[in-house]
Image (cartoon, rainbow over all chains, first blue to last red; front, side, top):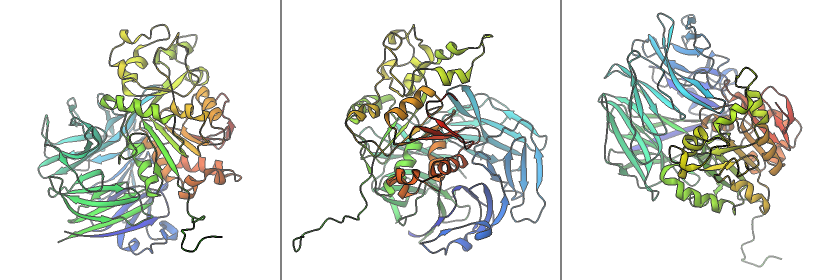
Length: 325
Length: 290
């Protein structure tokens, strides 16, 4: 397996990135704006330069006034950006062919932290804040029906860690994943949510992927002696079937993401100052590894909807990884 | 004169920068900052756990090794500290001391008048914090696992008559001998909202930059992301924040950049040289009532 890694530094703070269905067409949240960009316009940025976006660089402005707690998502069906604002969603064609629309959703709060859309593009699940007392707030979940404008607040799901949202077409329900414990909830928007526990042990990170076999949970955990393991869970309807932990050798792995298309994990690792992108199999075996160049720091990896491609995202970096062989 | 063949020290080489971390809740914020600092070649000097790629949360089976680490931390002198976890008033029941005449909770009075605050782990949260009171704080009467509690004061210690648990904060303890740190990130709810805590931090560390929320937060990643996304926080800043912040207008600029990367549902601030810089552009003495 060969890895071709191209990483660039970004001038503005990068708060998020999502793909559209056209290869290498991305929507990025940089500083307070959303931009539509084509990777080809960025990938040849000289190593010593940080790439600007907007008027001073490539990228078409999609939306302004976008804070880190304005959640947004690309509707896979219409390819429009759905951007949560207080009391409404902006529905925006990122390439400007269709006029923007506002979809009123009374009660949608000021702060939303993640969003996912169902396969019909009619419902958007968002992470919101639930205040408990003057010293405690939690994340909670709300579901916006874009047809009726109704907002349903789920009352039992809560977490003090970042949540990942997925639409699980396999069971026709949402999956809400706790990235700090590997636990998850299933919720269909009507019946009570069901919580499925994470694995035992000291969980460092958990990611969630919707695959053809269902939702796969990938947990990086540590044994008491400090040994790092990958624990893979298959989320069934009412339980997660956890595989035996696989010991990870080589540079310490911080997070692992399952390829939605096949049993292959993209991992972000770090040994001292150097970061690596690794690919491992279901047993944790290292198949290939590439170093991230100095000066570029990545925080997350995302599998592309296109085969053999992974995106790397950092606060000031964007990277594309192509696999071959 | 240098001897022939001798390795002459490179006096323009970058000085080693050190950091130490204490995590009492979800590790994601400390992990993110550790990864960034390591990428600059900075050295983790956290006792016991520095060799780990991620920062352990001092809960469950990590409480015992965590206590050993905290004990050793008092003899560590780091350039930067990051402390993360739950943070709040001594007990939840303390809120009742500041109710209005009609019995409603007065949040402004709570943050301005509560004398005793601290960082704490989940075991403390589920036992002491939720169930103890100033006149009722014996561990044997509390549910959960009070024996696993960790509480690090961020104010004066509460007297034994109202709090029977250990309240030591090794970062404060190290000030009796260690050189002043360059800065401290205090990543939890209301770390800079409580007047008594601001007064304590700025009293112990008058020349350090102290960054933390002036509001509730849900997760420490609100803080670590805002810190990372601020344009000013490049490698030079972490090496020598004083030379940056001593320039006119730079504290205000950093505060503005932190706010831009922080959720609008919360507030983040910084204290530098006993002044609190706030998201609305104002600044006040750190020990002022807000």
